Image 1 (cartoon, rainbow, N blue to C red):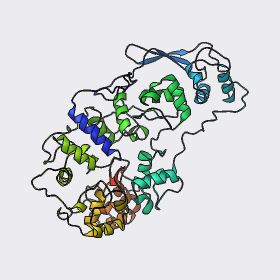
Image 2: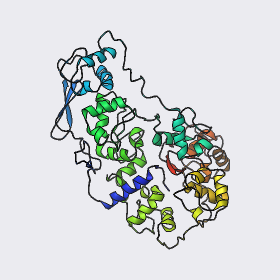
Image 3: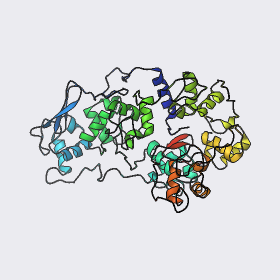
Image 4: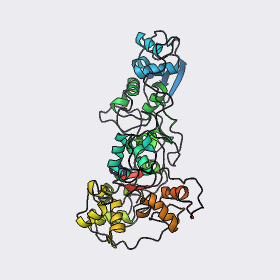
Amino acid sequence: MLARLAWSLPLACALLLSSACGDDSTQVPSDGSSSSTTTASTGPTPPSTSGTTSVGPTTAVADETGTSSTTGPVPGSNCCAEHADPGCDDPDVAACVCRQEAFCCAFDWDADCVTLAEQCGGCGDPTTTGDPTTTTGGPELNPCCDAARTPGCPEDPVVEACVCALDAFCCDTQWDDACGMTAARQCSATCGGGGQGACCAPAGTPGCAEDPAIETCVCALDAFCCDTQWDGQCVDIAQADCGAACMVMGGGDCCAPNGSPGCDDMPTQDCVCALDPFCCSTEWDDICVSEAQYGCMLDCGLPPAGQGDCCMPQAGPACGDMMVSDCVCMIDGGCCLSPWGDGCIQIAVNSCGIMCPGFDPQPPCCQIQMGPGCGDAALEACVCGFDPFCCSTQWDDICVDEAQNDCMLDCGMGPPPPPGDCCTPQASAGCDVPEVQDCVCMLDPFCCSAEWDEICVDEANIDCGGCLGPGTGTGTGGSGSGTGGSISGGTISTGGSSGI
Protein backbone atom coordinates (compact mmCIF):
# COMPACT_ATOMS: atom_id res chain seq x y z
CA MET A 1 0.00 0.00 0.00
CA LEU A 2 1.12 3.49 -0.69
CA ALA A 3 1.05 5.15 2.68
CA ARG A 4 3.05 8.26 3.30
CA LEU A 5 0.65 10.76 4.77
CA ALA A 6 0.29 11.48 8.45
CA TRP A 7 -2.67 13.60 7.42
CA SER A 8 -4.30 10.58 5.73
CA LEU A 9 -7.56 10.84 7.66
CA PRO A 10 -8.45 14.42 6.73
CA LEU A 11 -7.22 13.78 3.20
CA ALA A 12 -9.45 10.73 2.89
CA CYS A 13 -12.47 12.89 3.64
CA ALA A 14 -11.32 15.48 1.11
CA LEU A 15 -10.88 12.81 -1.53
CA LEU A 16 -14.27 11.30 -0.97
CA LEU A 17 -15.93 14.70 -1.17
CA SER A 18 -14.08 15.54 -4.38
CA SER A 19 -14.98 12.20 -5.97
CA ALA A 20 -18.64 12.94 -5.33
CA CYS A 21 -18.53 16.42 -6.85
CA GLY A 22 -17.67 16.78 -10.50
CA ASP A 23 -17.88 20.57 -10.56
CA ASP A 24 -15.12 23.08 -10.03
CA SER A 25 -15.42 24.63 -6.61
CA THR A 26 -14.30 27.75 -4.85
CA GLN A 27 -13.83 27.95 -1.10
CA VAL A 28 -15.79 30.75 0.49
CA PRO A 29 -15.02 31.82 4.04
CA SER A 30 -17.68 30.92 6.54
CA ASP A 31 -18.32 34.58 7.28
CA GLY A 32 -19.34 35.15 3.67
CA SER A 33 -16.42 37.41 2.82
CA SER A 34 -14.54 36.92 -0.41
CA SER A 35 -11.24 35.07 -0.34
CA SER A 36 -8.08 36.50 -1.82
CA THR A 37 -7.47 33.23 -3.61
CA THR A 38 -9.41 30.28 -4.94
CA THR A 39 -8.53 27.01 -3.27
CA ALA A 40 -9.89 24.46 -5.73
CA SER A 41 -9.82 24.82 -9.46
CA THR A 42 -9.23 22.88 -12.65
CA GLY A 43 -7.13 25.54 -14.26
CA PRO A 44 -4.96 28.57 -13.57
CA THR A 45 -6.73 31.47 -11.93
CA PRO A 46 -4.96 34.73 -11.19
CA PRO A 47 -4.88 35.84 -7.57
CA SER A 48 -7.46 38.50 -6.88
CA THR A 49 -7.40 41.64 -4.82
CA SER A 50 -9.61 44.65 -4.81
CA GLY A 51 -8.84 48.34 -5.02
CA THR A 52 -5.38 49.86 -4.76
CA THR A 53 -2.87 48.87 -2.13
CA SER A 54 0.27 50.83 -1.45
CA VAL A 55 3.11 48.45 -0.69
CA GLY A 56 6.53 49.74 0.30
CA PRO A 57 8.12 51.97 -2.28
CA THR A 58 5.77 50.82 -5.04
CA THR A 59 2.02 51.01 -5.48
CA ALA A 60 0.21 47.80 -6.46
CA VAL A 61 -2.92 48.37 -8.55
CA ALA A 62 -5.30 45.53 -9.30
CA ASP A 63 -6.49 45.55 -12.89
CA GLU A 64 -9.77 44.11 -14.10
CA THR A 65 -8.28 40.59 -14.17
CA GLY A 66 -7.22 40.79 -10.53
CA THR A 67 -3.52 40.78 -11.41
CA SER A 68 -1.36 43.33 -9.64
CA SER A 69 0.95 45.69 -11.45
CA THR A 70 3.42 48.15 -9.98
CA THR A 71 3.78 51.80 -10.80
CA GLY A 72 7.34 52.40 -9.63
CA PRO A 73 8.85 54.25 -6.65
CA VAL A 74 6.64 56.62 -4.67
CA PRO A 75 7.97 60.21 -5.13
CA GLY A 76 9.67 61.68 -2.06
CA SER A 77 9.80 58.36 -0.19
CA ASN A 78 13.12 58.97 1.55
CA CYS A 79 13.62 56.40 4.30
CA CYS A 80 15.16 59.08 6.53
CA ALA A 81 12.35 61.62 6.25
CA GLU A 82 8.70 61.51 7.24
CA HIS A 83 6.22 61.29 4.35
CA ALA A 84 2.58 60.42 3.82
CA ASP A 85 3.21 57.33 1.73
CA PRO A 86 3.81 53.84 3.12
CA GLY A 87 7.27 52.36 2.70
CA CYS A 88 10.42 54.09 1.47
CA ASP A 89 12.80 54.06 -1.45
CA ASP A 90 15.31 51.53 -0.06
CA PRO A 91 13.70 48.04 -0.16
CA ASP A 92 16.20 46.58 2.35
CA VAL A 93 15.60 49.34 4.88
CA ALA A 94 11.84 49.19 4.32
CA ALA A 95 11.81 45.44 4.92
CA CYS A 96 13.90 45.84 8.08
CA VAL A 97 11.62 48.57 9.44
CA CYS A 98 8.35 46.91 8.56
CA ARG A 99 9.31 43.63 10.15
CA GLN A 100 9.33 45.60 13.40
CA GLU A 101 6.48 48.03 12.71
CA ALA A 102 4.00 46.99 10.01
CA PHE A 103 2.27 50.38 10.15
CA CYS A 104 5.19 51.90 8.24
CA CYS A 105 4.49 49.79 5.14
CA ALA A 106 0.71 49.87 5.46
CA PHE A 107 -0.19 53.52 6.12
CA ASP A 108 2.45 56.25 6.27
CA TRP A 109 6.13 56.68 7.07
CA ASP A 110 6.09 58.70 10.30
CA ALA A 111 8.75 59.74 12.82
CA ASP A 112 8.82 56.32 14.45
CA CYS A 113 9.49 54.73 11.04
CA VAL A 114 12.37 57.15 10.49
CA THR A 115 13.84 56.20 13.88
CA LEU A 116 13.64 52.52 12.95
CA ALA A 117 15.22 53.28 9.57
CA GLU A 118 18.15 54.85 11.38
CA GLN A 119 18.47 51.75 13.56
CA CYS A 120 18.42 49.61 10.40
CA GLY A 121 21.42 51.48 8.99
CA GLY A 122 19.51 53.39 6.34
CA CYS A 123 20.43 56.96 7.27
CA GLY A 124 24.20 57.03 7.33
CA ASP A 125 24.68 57.00 11.12
CA PRO A 126 22.75 54.07 12.52
CA THR A 127 22.72 53.23 16.18
CA THR A 128 22.56 49.59 15.10
CA THR A 129 23.05 47.98 11.75
CA GLY A 130 20.71 45.56 10.10
CA ASP A 131 17.38 44.21 11.14
CA PRO A 132 17.61 43.21 14.80
CA THR A 133 14.90 40.61 14.26
CA THR A 134 16.75 38.68 11.59
CA THR A 135 20.01 36.91 10.95
CA THR A 136 21.90 36.68 7.70
CA GLY A 137 22.28 33.60 5.55
CA GLY A 138 18.67 32.38 5.59
CA PRO A 139 17.06 30.04 8.08
CA GLU A 140 19.38 27.78 10.06
CA LEU A 141 18.94 24.16 9.11
CA ASN A 142 17.78 21.82 11.84
CA PRO A 143 20.24 18.99 12.68
CA CYS A 144 17.30 16.58 12.99
CA CYS A 145 16.91 16.73 9.19
CA ASP A 146 19.96 14.51 8.74
CA ALA A 147 20.05 10.72 9.09
CA ALA A 148 22.29 9.25 11.79
CA ARG A 149 23.46 5.79 12.80
CA THR A 150 22.23 6.33 16.36
CA PRO A 151 18.69 6.75 17.73
CA GLY A 152 17.18 10.12 18.60
CA CYS A 153 18.08 13.72 17.85
CA PRO A 154 19.26 15.28 21.14
CA GLU A 155 20.21 18.53 19.37
CA ASP A 156 16.50 19.49 19.22
CA PRO A 157 14.43 17.77 21.93
CA VAL A 158 11.17 19.30 20.70
CA VAL A 159 11.54 17.92 17.17
CA GLU A 160 12.85 14.64 18.57
CA ALA A 161 9.77 14.23 20.76
CA CYS A 162 7.45 15.06 17.87
CA VAL A 163 9.09 12.59 15.48
CA CYS A 164 9.34 9.75 17.98
CA ALA A 165 5.71 10.12 18.97
CA LEU A 166 4.94 9.38 15.32
CA ASP A 167 7.62 6.73 14.75
CA ALA A 168 9.16 5.12 17.84
CA PHE A 169 11.85 3.48 15.71
CA CYS A 170 13.57 6.86 15.43
CA CYS A 171 14.28 6.97 19.17
CA ASP A 172 14.51 3.24 19.84
CA THR A 173 16.79 2.07 17.03
CA GLN A 174 18.08 4.62 14.50
CA TRP A 175 17.40 8.15 13.30
CA ASP A 176 17.22 7.22 9.61
CA ASP A 177 16.27 9.13 6.46
CA ALA A 178 12.57 8.66 7.11
CA CYS A 179 12.96 10.21 10.57
CA GLY A 180 14.59 13.24 8.98
CA MET A 181 11.78 13.52 6.46
CA THR A 182 9.21 13.20 9.25
CA ALA A 183 10.97 16.04 11.06
CA ALA A 184 10.60 18.22 7.97
CA ARG A 185 7.13 17.19 6.90
CA GLN A 186 5.33 16.76 10.18
CA CYS A 187 7.36 18.41 12.95
CA SER A 188 8.20 21.86 11.54
CA ALA A 189 11.95 21.33 11.28
CA THR A 190 13.63 23.70 8.81
CA CYS A 191 15.49 21.42 6.43
CA GLY A 192 17.57 21.88 3.33
CA GLY A 193 16.79 20.53 -0.11
CA GLY A 194 14.27 23.24 -0.93
CA GLY A 195 13.28 24.23 2.59
CA GLN A 196 11.49 27.56 2.95
CA GLY A 197 11.90 30.32 5.50
CA ALA A 198 9.21 31.32 7.97
CA CYS A 199 5.76 32.21 6.58
CA CYS A 200 6.72 31.08 3.05
CA ALA A 201 4.22 28.23 2.64
CA PRO A 202 0.47 28.62 2.08
CA ALA A 203 -1.64 27.01 4.78
CA GLY A 204 -5.26 26.12 5.36
CA THR A 205 -5.42 28.24 8.48
CA PRO A 206 -5.13 31.99 9.12
CA GLY A 207 -1.95 33.72 10.26
CA CYS A 208 1.70 32.69 10.51
CA ALA A 209 2.77 31.87 14.05
CA GLU A 210 6.32 31.06 12.86
CA ASP A 211 7.21 34.76 12.72
CA PRO A 212 4.88 37.25 14.45
CA ALA A 213 6.66 40.24 12.90
CA ILE A 214 6.08 38.97 9.35
CA GLU A 215 2.52 38.02 10.27
CA THR A 216 1.81 41.52 11.57
CA CYS A 217 3.31 43.15 8.50
CA VAL A 218 1.40 40.97 6.02
CA CYS A 219 -1.93 41.22 7.80
CA ALA A 220 -1.70 45.00 7.97
CA LEU A 221 -1.58 44.89 4.17
CA ASP A 222 -4.16 42.12 3.69
CA ALA A 223 -6.37 41.28 6.66
CA PHE A 224 -7.65 38.15 4.88
CA CYS A 225 -4.33 36.49 5.72
CA CYS A 226 -5.04 36.63 9.47
CA ASP A 227 -8.83 36.51 9.38
CA THR A 228 -9.39 33.60 7.00
CA GLN A 229 -6.41 31.84 5.42
CA TRP A 230 -2.67 32.27 4.86
CA ASP A 231 -2.73 31.62 1.11
CA GLY A 232 -0.33 32.11 -1.79
CA GLN A 233 -1.13 35.82 -1.99
CA CYS A 234 -0.08 36.20 1.65
CA VAL A 235 3.20 34.42 0.91
CA ASP A 236 3.82 36.79 -2.00
CA ILE A 237 3.28 39.79 0.28
CA ALA A 238 5.51 38.26 2.96
CA GLN A 239 8.35 37.89 0.49
CA ALA A 240 7.91 41.13 -1.46
CA ASP A 241 7.10 43.55 1.35
CA CYS A 242 7.78 42.04 4.76
CA GLY A 243 11.28 40.59 4.58
CA ALA A 244 10.41 36.88 4.47
CA ALA A 245 13.33 34.78 3.18
CA CYS A 246 11.36 32.70 0.69
CA MET A 247 12.60 30.64 -2.21
CA VAL A 248 11.01 31.26 -5.58
CA MET A 249 7.93 29.05 -5.58
CA GLY A 250 5.41 28.02 -8.17
CA GLY A 251 7.44 27.57 -11.36
CA GLY A 252 6.85 23.86 -11.94
CA ASP A 253 4.02 21.80 -13.36
CA CYS A 254 1.34 20.94 -10.79
CA CYS A 255 0.83 17.59 -12.52
CA ALA A 256 4.44 16.38 -12.29
CA PRO A 257 7.08 16.18 -9.54
CA ASN A 258 9.13 19.32 -10.16
CA GLY A 259 11.88 19.25 -7.52
CA SER A 260 10.99 22.62 -6.01
CA PRO A 261 8.33 23.98 -3.64
CA GLY A 262 4.91 24.77 -5.09
CA CYS A 263 3.61 24.67 -8.65
CA ASP A 264 2.47 26.99 -11.40
CA ASP A 265 -1.28 27.17 -10.62
CA MET A 266 -1.74 29.21 -7.44
CA PRO A 267 -5.28 27.96 -6.59
CA THR A 268 -4.16 24.34 -6.90
CA GLN A 269 -0.94 25.10 -5.02
CA ASP A 270 -2.87 26.70 -2.16
CA CYS A 271 -5.35 23.84 -1.99
CA VAL A 272 -2.67 21.14 -1.95
CA CYS A 273 -0.47 22.94 0.56
CA ALA A 274 -3.40 23.43 2.91
CA LEU A 275 -3.62 19.61 2.97
CA ASP A 276 0.12 18.97 2.92
CA PRO A 277 2.44 21.91 3.72
CA PHE A 278 5.48 19.84 2.66
CA CYS A 279 4.53 20.52 -0.97
CA CYS A 280 5.12 24.27 -0.53
CA SER A 281 7.80 24.23 2.15
CA THR A 282 10.15 21.62 0.71
CA GLU A 283 9.31 19.94 -2.60
CA TRP A 284 6.43 19.24 -4.98
CA ASP A 285 6.70 15.46 -5.30
CA ASP A 286 4.49 12.70 -6.68
CA ILE A 287 2.35 12.67 -3.54
CA CYS A 288 1.60 16.36 -4.16
CA VAL A 289 0.58 15.49 -7.73
CA SER A 290 -1.87 12.89 -6.43
CA GLU A 291 -3.26 15.41 -3.95
CA ALA A 292 -3.69 17.95 -6.75
CA GLN A 293 -5.95 15.58 -8.68
CA TYR A 294 -7.71 13.64 -5.96
CA GLY A 295 -7.93 16.33 -3.29
CA CYS A 296 -8.06 19.57 -5.32
CA MET A 297 -9.97 18.74 -8.50
CA LEU A 298 -7.10 19.31 -10.96
CA ASP A 299 -7.18 16.92 -13.91
CA CYS A 300 -3.66 15.51 -14.19
CA GLY A 301 -4.69 12.55 -16.29
CA LEU A 302 -4.57 10.09 -13.39
CA PRO A 303 -7.29 7.42 -13.18
CA PRO A 304 -10.56 8.69 -11.67
CA ALA A 305 -11.26 8.10 -8.00
CA GLY A 306 -14.31 6.47 -6.47
CA GLN A 307 -15.15 4.13 -9.36
CA GLY A 308 -16.07 0.47 -9.61
CA ASP A 309 -16.88 -2.51 -7.39
CA CYS A 310 -15.31 -2.32 -3.93
CA CYS A 311 -14.56 -6.05 -4.15
CA MET A 312 -12.40 -5.60 -7.25
CA PRO A 313 -9.05 -3.83 -7.72
CA GLN A 314 -9.47 -0.42 -9.37
CA ALA A 315 -7.06 1.72 -11.39
CA GLY A 316 -7.77 4.77 -9.23
CA PRO A 317 -8.18 5.42 -5.50
CA ALA A 318 -11.31 4.47 -3.52
CA CYS A 319 -14.24 2.51 -4.91
CA GLY A 320 -17.79 3.21 -6.01
CA ASP A 321 -19.37 2.88 -2.56
CA MET A 322 -18.61 6.06 -0.64
CA MET A 323 -19.42 4.56 2.77
CA VAL A 324 -17.03 1.65 2.21
CA SER A 325 -14.33 3.94 0.81
CA ASP A 326 -14.68 6.30 3.76
CA CYS A 327 -14.44 3.41 6.25
CA VAL A 328 -11.36 1.93 4.55
CA CYS A 329 -9.59 5.26 4.18
CA MET A 330 -10.08 6.04 7.86
CA ILE A 331 -7.89 2.97 8.47
CA ASP A 332 -5.47 3.38 5.57
CA GLY A 333 -5.46 6.75 3.83
CA GLY A 334 -3.36 5.28 1.02
CA CYS A 335 -6.50 3.61 -0.35
CA CYS A 336 -7.82 7.08 -1.21
CA LEU A 337 -4.59 8.24 -2.81
CA SER A 338 -3.24 5.22 -4.69
CA PRO A 339 -5.01 2.47 -6.70
CA TRP A 340 -7.61 0.44 -4.82
CA GLY A 341 -5.91 -2.94 -4.48
CA ASP A 342 -6.22 -6.21 -2.62
CA GLY A 343 -5.06 -4.65 0.65
CA CYS A 344 -7.91 -2.13 0.53
CA ILE A 345 -10.39 -4.90 -0.28
CA GLN A 346 -9.14 -6.94 2.68
CA ILE A 347 -9.59 -3.95 5.01
CA ALA A 348 -13.13 -3.51 3.67
CA VAL A 349 -13.92 -7.16 4.43
CA ASN A 350 -12.22 -7.10 7.83
CA SER A 351 -13.59 -3.83 9.14
CA CYS A 352 -16.25 -2.28 6.92
CA GLY A 353 -19.04 -4.85 6.78
CA ILE A 354 -18.84 -6.17 3.21
CA MET A 355 -18.28 -9.67 1.87
CA CYS A 356 -16.04 -10.22 -1.16
CA PRO A 357 -15.38 -13.53 -2.97
CA GLY A 358 -11.88 -14.80 -2.20
CA PHE A 359 -11.42 -12.54 0.83
CA ASP A 360 -12.16 -14.00 4.26
CA PRO A 361 -12.18 -11.92 7.43
CA GLN A 362 -8.82 -12.16 9.16
CA PRO A 363 -7.93 -12.51 12.84
CA PRO A 364 -7.60 -9.12 14.62
CA CYS A 365 -3.78 -9.28 14.68
CA CYS A 366 -3.79 -9.58 10.88
CA GLN A 367 -5.72 -6.32 10.63
CA ILE A 368 -4.71 -2.70 11.04
CA GLN A 369 -6.23 -1.42 14.27
CA MET A 370 -7.07 2.17 15.10
CA GLY A 371 -5.53 1.82 18.56
CA PRO A 372 -2.66 -0.06 20.23
CA GLY A 373 -2.47 -3.85 20.39
CA CYS A 374 -4.56 -6.54 18.69
CA GLY A 375 -6.09 -8.51 21.55
CA ASP A 376 -3.70 -11.49 21.50
CA ALA A 377 -1.33 -11.24 24.47
CA ALA A 378 1.24 -13.72 23.11
CA LEU A 379 1.49 -12.02 19.70
CA GLU A 380 1.55 -8.58 21.29
CA ALA A 381 4.44 -9.67 23.54
CA CYS A 382 6.37 -10.94 20.52
CA VAL A 383 5.83 -7.93 18.24
CA CYS A 384 6.01 -5.22 20.87
CA GLY A 385 9.19 -6.68 22.26
CA PHE A 386 11.03 -5.11 19.33
CA ASP A 387 8.48 -2.51 18.16
CA PRO A 388 6.87 -0.88 21.22
CA PHE A 389 4.87 1.50 19.03
CA CYS A 390 2.49 -1.36 18.19
CA CYS A 391 1.37 -1.65 21.82
CA SER A 392 1.70 1.98 22.88
CA THR A 393 0.15 3.87 19.98
CA GLN A 394 -1.31 1.88 17.07
CA TRP A 395 -1.28 -1.62 15.61
CA ASP A 396 -0.56 -0.49 12.04
CA ASP A 397 0.36 -2.34 8.86
CA ILE A 398 4.02 -2.57 9.90
CA CYS A 399 2.91 -4.37 13.07
CA VAL A 400 0.84 -6.77 10.97
CA ASP A 401 3.88 -7.49 8.77
CA GLU A 402 6.03 -8.06 11.84
CA ALA A 403 3.45 -10.44 13.32
CA GLN A 404 3.56 -12.53 10.14
CA ASN A 405 7.25 -12.32 9.30
CA ASP A 406 8.78 -12.43 12.78
CA CYS A 407 6.16 -13.94 15.09
CA MET A 408 4.79 -16.79 12.93
CA LEU A 409 1.24 -15.43 12.59
CA ASP A 410 -0.62 -17.04 9.68
CA CYS A 411 -2.85 -14.44 8.02
CA GLY A 412 -3.71 -16.72 5.11
CA MET A 413 -1.80 -14.63 2.65
CA GLY A 414 0.50 -17.42 1.51
CA PRO A 415 4.28 -17.28 1.34
CA PRO A 416 5.95 -13.96 0.61
CA PRO A 417 6.82 -13.26 -3.04
CA PRO A 418 10.34 -14.15 -4.19
CA PRO A 419 12.87 -11.39 -3.61
CA GLY A 420 13.40 -8.85 -6.38
CA ASP A 421 16.37 -7.07 -7.89
CA CYS A 422 18.55 -5.35 -5.25
CA CYS A 423 19.08 -2.44 -7.69
CA THR A 424 15.37 -1.71 -8.17
CA PRO A 425 12.75 -0.55 -5.65
CA GLN A 426 10.29 -3.39 -4.92
CA ALA A 427 6.95 -3.59 -3.15
CA SER A 428 8.20 -6.72 -1.37
CA ALA A 429 10.82 -7.07 1.34
CA GLY A 430 14.41 -8.16 0.72
CA CYS A 431 16.30 -8.65 -2.53
CA ASP A 432 17.97 -11.37 -4.58
CA VAL A 433 21.64 -10.98 -3.56
CA PRO A 434 21.99 -12.43 -0.04
CA GLU A 435 25.19 -10.55 0.83
CA VAL A 436 23.64 -7.22 -0.17
CA GLN A 437 20.34 -8.00 1.54
CA ASP A 438 22.03 -8.98 4.81
CA CYS A 439 24.22 -5.87 4.81
CA VAL A 440 21.37 -3.46 4.08
CA CYS A 441 18.97 -5.03 6.56
CA MET A 442 21.54 -4.81 9.35
CA LEU A 443 21.46 -1.05 8.74
CA ASP A 444 17.77 -0.73 7.97
CA PRO A 445 15.49 -3.60 9.10
CA PHE A 446 12.55 -2.06 7.24
CA CYS A 447 14.09 -3.28 3.96
CA CYS A 448 13.65 -6.92 5.02
CA SER A 449 10.43 -6.64 6.98
CA ALA A 450 8.24 -4.46 4.78
CA GLU A 451 9.52 -3.08 1.47
CA TRP A 452 12.73 -2.76 -0.55
CA ASP A 453 12.32 0.90 -1.47
CA GLU A 454 14.53 3.64 -2.95
CA ILE A 455 16.38 4.16 0.33
CA CYS A 456 17.26 0.46 0.48
CA VAL A 457 18.72 0.70 -3.03
CA ASP A 458 20.71 3.76 -1.94
CA GLU A 459 22.03 1.90 1.10
CA ALA A 460 23.04 -1.06 -1.07
CA ASN A 461 25.08 1.24 -3.32
CA ILE A 462 26.51 3.58 -0.71
CA ASP A 463 26.99 1.41 2.37
CA CYS A 464 27.17 -2.17 1.14
CA GLY A 465 29.54 -2.13 -1.81
CA GLY A 466 26.98 -2.06 -4.60
CA CYS A 467 23.52 -3.35 -5.39
CA LEU A 468 24.90 -6.11 -7.65
CA GLY A 469 27.25 -7.30 -4.93
CA PRO A 470 30.30 -6.03 -3.04
CA GLY A 471 32.55 -3.91 -5.21
CA THR A 472 29.87 -2.91 -7.72
CA GLY A 473 28.67 0.26 -6.00
CA THR A 474 28.33 3.56 -7.80
CA GLY A 475 29.14 5.65 -4.74
CA THR A 476 26.01 7.70 -5.29
CA GLY A 477 22.52 7.25 -4.02
CA GLY A 478 19.36 6.61 -5.92
CA SER A 479 16.25 8.71 -5.89
CA GLY A 480 15.12 8.21 -2.32
CA SER A 481 14.10 11.82 -1.88
CA GLY A 482 10.52 11.48 -0.98
CA THR A 483 8.76 9.45 -3.66
CA GLY A 484 8.90 6.16 -1.86
CA GLY A 485 7.88 5.47 1.66
CA SER A 486 5.69 3.43 3.86
CA ILE A 487 3.47 3.60 6.83
CA SER A 488 5.70 3.54 9.89
CA GLY A 489 4.53 3.96 13.40
CA GLY A 490 0.99 4.81 12.37
CA THR A 491 2.03 7.70 10.19
CA ILE A 492 3.03 7.93 6.61
CA SER A 493 6.67 8.76 6.27
CA THR A 494 8.07 10.46 3.21
CA GLY A 495 11.10 9.54 1.33
CA GLY A 496 12.14 6.04 2.06
CA SER A 497 12.47 3.38 4.63
CA SER A 498 11.49 3.41 8.21
CA GLY A 499 12.42 1.08 10.95
CA ILE A 500 10.50 -1.42 12.90
